Image 1 (tube, rainbow, N blue to C red):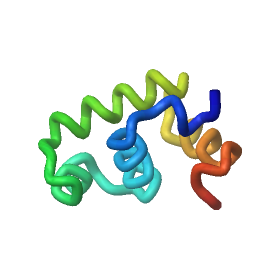
Image 2: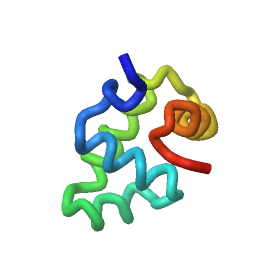
Image 3: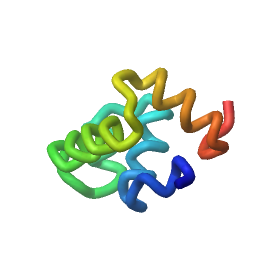
Image 4: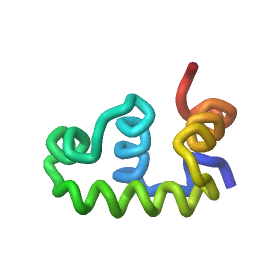
Length: 69
C-alpha cells in the first residue's frame, strides 16, 4: 500500500498542514474543525505511519513523493 493510501482525505489535509509547521489551532481554523479533532487526526496519522516524531513523518512523506523538500 502506498504511503498516502494509509490516510483519509482529511488526514492528508492535516498532514500537509502539519508538515508546514502549523499548530493544531491554526489547522483547526483553516479547516473549520475543532482543535480536538485536529489532535485526534494527528494521533491517527502518527499511528498509521508508524512514526514517533514529526521528522520521521516528514522523511516518509518526502520519500513517498507525497511532499517535496
